[in-house]
Image (cartoon, rainbow, N blue to C red; front, side, top):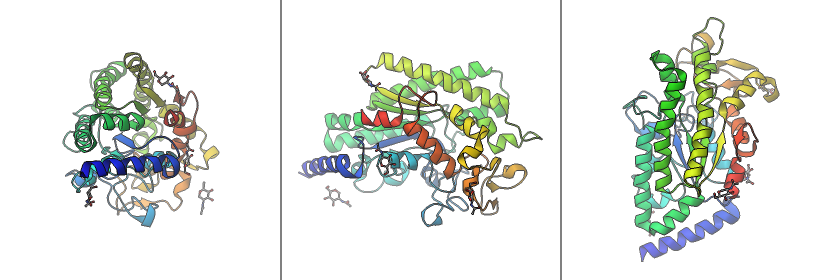
Length: 354
Ligand SMILES: *[C@@H]1O[C@H](CO)[C@@H](O)[C@H](O)[C@H]1NC(C)=O
Ligand SMILES: *[C@@H]1O[C@H](CO)[C@@H](O)[C@H](O)[C@H]1NC(C)=O
Ligand SMILES: *[C@@H]1O[C@H](CO)[C@@H](O)[C@H](O)[C@H]1NC(C)=O
Ligand SMILES: *[C@@H]1O[C@H](CO)[C@@H](O)[C@H](O)[C@H]1NC(C)=O
């Protein structure tokens, strides 16, 4: 009886979403990834990789730090807004509440700052992509328990799965000076990722939004390693190769599983354009972080003891690794409505309309 009531209320919810709340046919968004889209999972972990203190969140509703590595909203929030959906809550904050499986139908954010494709990336300090997929599988089982397998599959097939991962693996590679060439390293990333995407598919994802890595060598942390504040070329090279390889990986996946659709966003190209032509977007500071200490404000994270700039819309970067809310908003507009070579083969608006 309880299940029947729930099922009915879900149907109504679906109908309202389609007509008013959401302006696309997408009932929910499921996000996996790293700090670029973490909305508070790390608040629940014993880790040093956190952002639940000022000055993070200075431009968020109420000026509150939430665990987002940003002055305001991040890409997860903007993507949800574009789809007319609420920003998906952190899995670790909803999994324990009563009726959590009901909440699972409205979208879940599994992203965790520090996360990588490889388990070794910040091991023990975050939810690795593998761990996030394990949690997705747990959530799936709870949803099936509520409404059954077929209904859950239908729900997930209409939902969008956004994946943003890889930057932390690249930072580790650049730091470690390992033996692998950039090509070999990217090969190991994409072959691991291939298995991970298949597991996400097997759980029920059919609409993939994959967001590539940016020109990570141009973030303040890596620029500050050069006397003149230049971008770290090897980091950019690896990121560029990674974006190229993801396209092949997604093409191959589509040939194997013809019932998927995907939208890939080449953050490398899109963000590099902003960095090269900042004035088009009102940015006056390309190199320095808004919040931090030392050269380029890039020697430490944004903490209550760091300085922060008075005008956040003039900076591309918020802290030593992360973009400002302004940058996240511009990139998300591209994710949603952009065209080639920024998005391939379709943008997120088109993905959502399927
Ligand atoms: C949980 O769900 C059931 C069935 O939909 C509902 O009757 C109950 O009030 C809910 N409890 C809470 C705490 O939301
Ligand atoms: C949905 O609504 C949001 C907020 O009004 C808007 O930004 C977005 O472009 C809309 N999406 C579509 C597909 O119309
Ligand atoms: C989505 O996938 C289906 C099934 O393979 C395909 O027929 C359709 O053309 C795809 N849609 C787009 C916009 O690529
Ligand atoms: C903040 O920066 C933006 C973009 O550079 C500019 O348009 C705006 O006037 C600045 N605001 C203030 C208060 O200086």
